[in-house]
Image 1 (tube, rainbow, N blue to C red):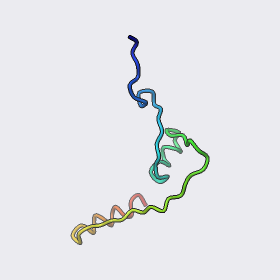
Image 2: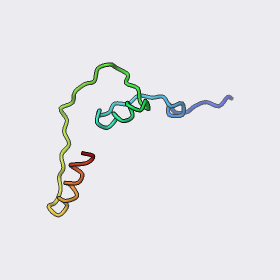
Image 3: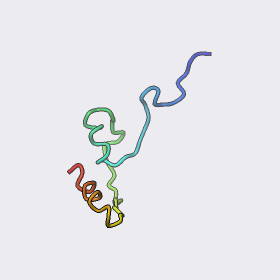
Length: 66
């Protein structure tokens, strides 16, 4: 029986859905290719919930990579 690929990542093919902020660098460098010409806007948000003792760390994360 001939050897076969068991997963799509074995041939560097596949599909993904991701937030533009997280995939833009890979799109720009050609590591990802958009499947469609139009992007869909999301109304989703990120929230930071923390104890008051951890606020310095949260402030650092909030401004990164800014």
